[in-house]
Length: 431
Image 1 (cartoon, one colour):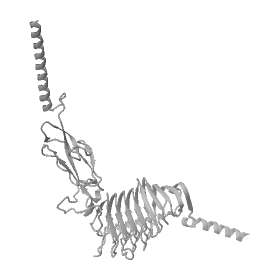
Image 2 (cartoon, one colour; image 1 turned 180 degrees about the vertical axis):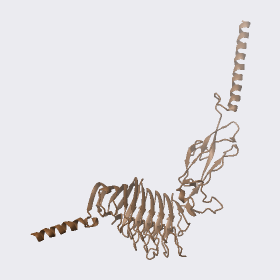
Image 3 (cartoon, helix red, strand yellow; image 1 turned 30 degrees about the horizontal axis):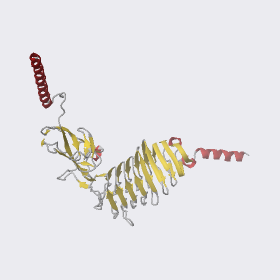
Image 4 (tube, one colour; image 1 turned 90 degrees about the vertical axis):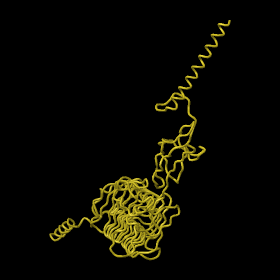
């Protein structure tokens, strides 16, 4: 009996000293909201396939969230930091996954794991109006593949995202020796920073093979900022494209996309909608910032030193439309989708006519624009002055032409009244 009590005491003592990780629990989530702050160190959160759920709160550390296929997951003020452990912060499997960003969120994975794991044969769409600061562990991408892993199918349509690759990992794309996968950006503000010798968007260091190091990359909307990781080796270095020692892949930039490149290093893109490659040294319309703005776009302060990029640039031309004088100066070229303030008609004149606004067609049958209104650029545009006959009414302050005209009409009216009165007097005297 005494011996049995000793064994029981020993077991109790052993349980007291078992590391917390050995007692880690799994939290299954099938729907609703789960608060990560309720986890203990080393816990896992398993989001069931096909579930629609929300994660919020700050995890205590070394907490892994694993999602089945077809999940719609919202991050709403969710924070996970696994930098001190070899654990993935958030991983997806299978097809049809959606990640919605709400509020400010941050994810950090441990060595060999992507911040958001989207590996080969996995698809994920990221959208929403919130933000995500995501960091891959060493040898892994910020969003995409882990060590030696390719990126999957990654589509981004919204949100403000900063994706940092770990050592040798792409910001968005492949881990070390991993290809970029298929990456599509249609909206949002996306900053992708590659780790050592890896692309900002595309392949990790040493990526090569079927599909090439970059994979298939299409950027058709939003603001994209990309830079490769520091690399002293004289090898191929792309902000968007291949990691060091990588090759192949394709890049298409189209529609309303604006793309900033920190080092102006990029695989040669297809430009079906006429984007222009601009650098600070260009003679015409160079990439020169005024404060935090360029081409009508406002960018983060740390990107005002960009060495190049791709933009669709348009401007407004003002036509006096038969008038005389100097028309307003055209504003500097601006990126598609940005807005300009329509000028007034100061300095333009026309005999027996006054300025009454602008129109996209000289005959006035196009789209009208009032002075001071906002015009969103979708192409190069010419605005024609609309002239109209002066209105004979009480003069407006400062309108000397109206004052003179009104005074003249008043005198004529008075003389006419006097003439009628004199005629009536004579007729009376005659009777």
